Picture 1 (spheres, rainbow, N blue to C red):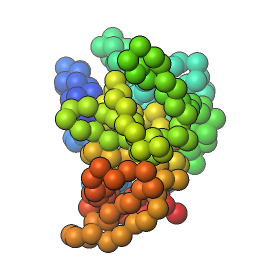
Picture 2 (spheres, rainbow, N blue to C red):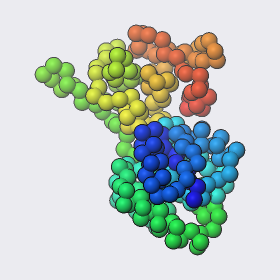
Picture 3 (tube, rainbow, N blue to C red):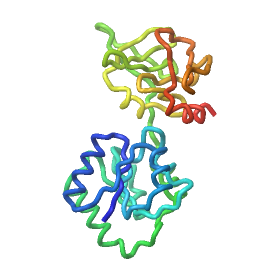
Picture 4 (tube, rainbow, N blue to C red):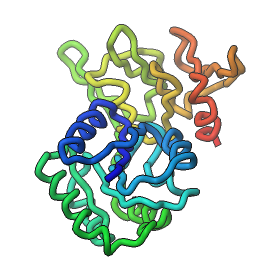
Length: 251
């Protein structure tokens, strides 16, 4: 049986690949973003089964299928709690909680194999997936950060943050008052905790606050330079592969 893994965390994708290989499933490909997945599904035969992460680096996974007819069964993989996902069971869509357990994975695959003859091709529609997300996936984004500075704890409201950036293997919060504070987490993990309507990761080094942008100018090789009210340590360049998404985000 051919399957596709859609997972933005590459170590998790590789681990799931190994686990599925032990169950004698053929992993056709591993996809890591909404954009990459849309292109692949438009140009390839759909697999029998998809293992689908809920939140990808560039959006929610249901966006993949908004303009595509689904011809695959879906098993969701997610780090979010079981209570919030009861509706998935009601809609006959299975899910696995991360970190994925070998036995639970085997049970989910066995369940699909036992029921697949009863399922029709394209058994779930894009609007049904979107409805489930709206009902069950209410992400509680970060509202504040508590950072230890010397012997004191400082509280920063999310609206006080100008941007986040990585430098010398550290991740920093930069405030509207033009000061930086070291955070104890990676930029990748931080991105998932921020409201995507307010914050955008313009490159591997920077996440910017929409309200802090004062100007956007053209840069070399079809890239853009973002100028913030409160940050002048270095240039903020939107990577070329994210320019299109950045423009869409601005709208």
